[in-house]
Image 1 (spheres, rainbow, N blue to C red):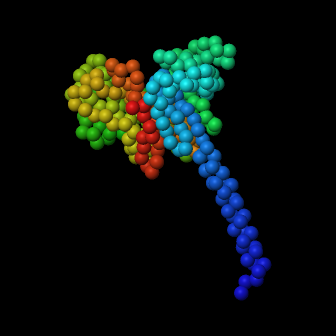
Image 2 (image 1 turned 30 degrees about the vertical axis):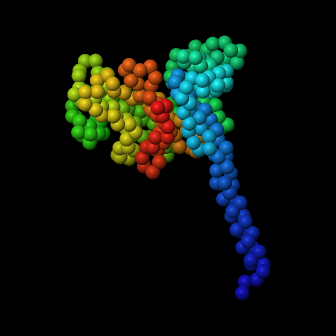
Image 3 (image 1 turned 180 degrees about the vertical axis):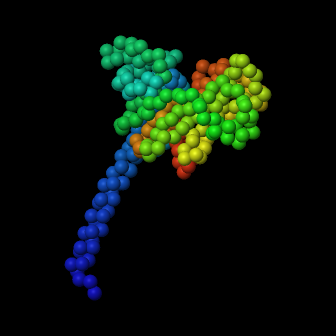
Length: 259
């Protein structure tokens, strides 16, 4: 029969084990439960995050509560610093003395009790059409289709030291051709597998379609995994459709939009 001393040693080992596990996982979970943020995308979309939930602020009155608040501001996904924001018909940027700051690029800004990391990226010309043709074929579209927008973005999206390729294919708002079927497709290629974010295919959509583009890649919840902000512009509408996606269980999941 084990001695009392053996039981004491085993008990101490268990206590140490649970303390170590709590140090690795418990503290981080507690911190994540307390995370709160406001994320501004462009001029019309404001999302808040708290208790692991996203909420879209739907009207200008809700957005104006942040007037003269300090935000981390990014222009074209490059951080420019902390500035004051003020909203009327759009977001305006001011320095600490409330002097206007020139801002003409793509706006992304946040305030939070944690750091949001943003990945810079560049749009690239598509030279290898292997995946483009496969996607067109899978959607019963001609592989000789014309495009009004086609490009890729190469980025280590999930921070595993392997670059993923994100594509945009669209023939919406074509000026020099008139397609019978209008399509806009956004997808990622990882390890030769295609993962779709956005698919909009319709007959004779014309200028009622929506042309997507990648707005930002942001770690919105400080878990080391980046989310994707996809924006989609409509020809006759000033406000864009903004969509926030996360990648879970080998699929993209829509977290929130501005509609």
